Image (tube, rainbow, N blue to C red; front, side):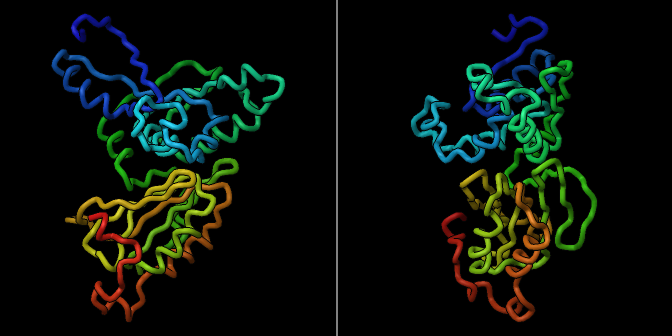
Length: 289
């Protein structure tokens, strides 16, 4: 079938199929035929983005997947697709057309449309964004960059300059901000568990890597979309220097408060000299290894 394709082809994917999974099959097939992928474009309604990020239903429950066991949430699916795409095509949703008189904020230039556009700028700072009245000028797909962005734990934020040692960058676009935090000492697991609630509160998206005192050799990945926060293991640090590096996107961020919360989780001078087994396993990291 691929041999019979015309020169230019657009492949449309349903809202539960990840682009990277499709490209695992397509890339080698296209390479054999001397062809390549030009762009990965994500079409979305910015007026619905925030609600989709906070949706606590699974893709199956939301009617977006035909697989009953698909327990990903819309937000979890979206952040990966946003990271992997190089272009975002902004479209007015069905709600804006069916209920035009009752949904002025959902149309192009409306309050909800603009707010969603601002959120997308924080979640996908790399994207070439095409608005409804813009020319269709797609960005170029770069495989290595796309895979890096879509790797769990990757922190990809717009460069807003250095703020201080603990808060490296605060990106501001409209109502949403992204606060980037770093720590050079391991985290105390119990204090970190208690702090995660305050770090994640109100966050539309959080991501990064954690260096935790009771498992100092393990590279732990922090992820969160809307109401859900999760930890997963990414193996050992290897040649990479162990560290904590997280980013939090919200419309209510206070960089100083967040930096202080993370700082309170760091091991003290006295604690650093102790054995890792003395800290307990409040985050149940042994279940994730």
